[in-house]
View (cartoon, rainbow, N blue to C red):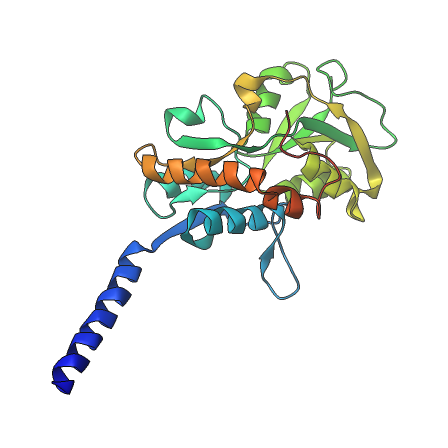
Length: 259
């Protein structure tokens, strides 16, 4: 009788463990394999840290997902998603109509404007006229690159595209280009660094939602509608329960979510 009872208990334990494994949904979270402070960067121990890492952790916990961070080259991140090498993108990717032809997005999770930075000794503003004759740097395969090509290509002397934002920043600091365009928060992080002491903020570029998008969203495969619903519910929940504001205050003194 005892042996039968032990066998029954063991079978129940195995069944519960198996059920737990089946119910756990493991997802690979892709983001650019490069420093993009304050959103993502490597600390001294080689660990990824930053606002977007904390956002990802909060979202995954809220949605009860087992998330594995998976750095990917930015210019190949959408193909990595559609080919199932990753399951979602949390990497400051703007929601644009062009990208929505290929992938789906969650609701926005933050929204900040784009702007221009240049050398302190060079006075110009963030307009096509102000950038006339300038060499402008921008990260490849970004909505900022699309914006510059649409609005500044007729006026600029040259548009230089870089694999990473850090490379564009370095060329500006070295005087090899005249200006860079990026998200204002990323630009502020550069200006607060030693390398950024050379430069100042020239202003926000004029908004163009068709190119710059309507905020940053989590990139998803179009067929993953259940995952999209979970993530949208999680975004709404962490904004309502104060978790979103709690970790955001460690990085920003303004409302990053936007209007």
